[in-house]
Image (tube, rainbow, N blue to C red):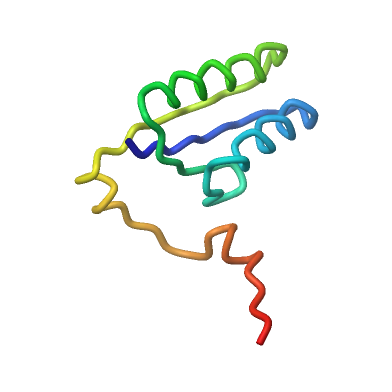
Length: 91
């Protein structure tokens, strides 16, 4: 299943930990939005890890939205994704 993960985290230290964790397996679409494919077991592990990483925060919001194949195929986006900005072609 594909998931969209969004966050609003005010504490830099906690936000950095969440970003580092998500960047290890997810595609960064925007500064605070990631997309990934996870099995049910992987999703539960991800949810628990994100809960643990943000437990010390008093002002933190996380949203994980599942996208079925049909919804993912109809997803529309405009602009430049974060990963594209990091692209480097050497010829």
